[in-house]
Picture 1 (tube, helix red, strand yellow):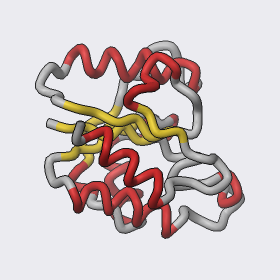
Picture 2 (cartoon, one colour; picture 1 turned 180 degrees about the vertical axis):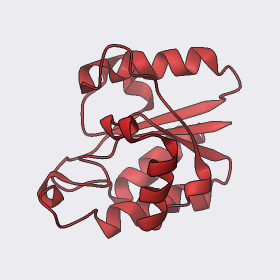
Picture 3 (cartoon, one colour; picture 1 turned 45 degrees about the vertical axis):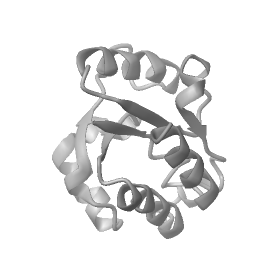
Length: 141
């Protein structure tokens, strides 16, 4: 299995969109393009949005034209929802799922511990086509 760890704010919901204008159609389409180009990829939400639960997240993804059937799981919330804890939460998830062959972390927050597998987005722009190409390169190395 290949996993895309997905943050929401700053990735598919850029900072410039946070005040009621919805998610970025382009950023969502770029996430979907990764899923389309590599059908083995599954999504694990690492965002603070995971507090809403898997069913609500599936609805959010579907409403934004991202294949919600690809949502595999969410990371734990040990240590809280602060982005400073995400790398540890992702690593714990990976430690419990040895079947993962490759993974990529999509986030606007830096994660030095996972840098070789991370695509850091510009939080004001969101997930671009260039970011999608980098993510696919990581997933297929």
